[in-house]
View (tube, rainbow, N blue to C red):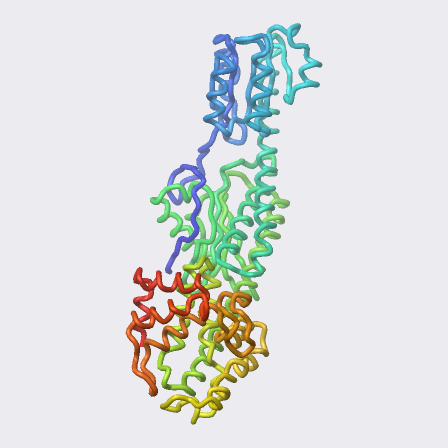
Length: 516
């Protein structure tokens, strides 16, 4: 089986690369202790020794002043809880720190608990009413049990807020990607898969016994014997050496969903969800967790799995249509070339020139390819021109040229029966229009027309000049470039001319020039 890893994302997570090892607890809850009394900080750590929630222990970060706390906060964005003394370097240093955290750093997720040994200086009701904190405690009432309860409840609140936020981000990605999914560009489909996977993980985190960051997952598509990793999170994707493990997991998933083989070699708690279209497996989602997912979680995951399958089905239909369109373009282009055999591989070069120029002018790679395909049909209307005119070895008479000019409108008529050839229709109709409005068949200034028509106008003339015809010898490239340059601003769009000449000088057209 061939395995391809694509669009792999690092989430800055580490872990064992052993395929069969149990999923270890690789994460901690960070707790910031801010108190100018070292004994209080030491006692707090001692009283919370052995604390664990969802398999994660506490990591303490200590500061003896609000100033030191700010330095720590600047370095750690994932602190779950801060226990803050009020009176330190000033009588309200702790309260000023709360304001700094909430307003300047805009850290809304971190839970804040005010502790004071001088409650008279900072009355409880005033503090709760005027500061965005989660609890207020007199140090004398913080027994071991009450401290444990406070820390556990606030960290659980932090966990749930983070889970909801992750859930929200996943939904946002899906919502943002949805309009683009219907266009099925590579990037949007990737964003869609990424959003689906993020959303699944967010939903899992809403379970009380789930872990915030210890689910690993992958969305993959399957074509024949080829597996493509579309999106992934977790420790699988942190280091290059884990790529072998990804390959092993992918093979095991395929063996399971296609051949019903055992998955004993996968980690405990892993979940494989096949993506099916018309009862055919076209992909899978793989998840790892060190807890059992609830039936509700599994139902939600299945809903989003179906979303993935629907997206893949849409992609499949789109690719089939795109392939059919491409084949139709090639067929029509061959018909036009067969009719006018003197042009040789003119249409293939024209498509390649158009694509190259379009990309250099900032058109996306996908749209540039569409421009190139449309350009190949610029002369399809010549099938309606009599052979004695089309293949005449000498110069055309005025009357014959008037007939030849009809190929633009004939081509547009041929291409008018499908929305998929609308771009090619415009190219066929307008590629002989001029920048100064003196072209044919409409006499429209080409600056008012689509960019692709202005590009084709330049590259069509260049390729015709450097190609041998029954009525002329081939021009040198330099002479042809001079002719193009002399027509800049009158016959041709100056911007297109500038880009075309620059591409030629930089060697960007070399591979096209030798096509025959």
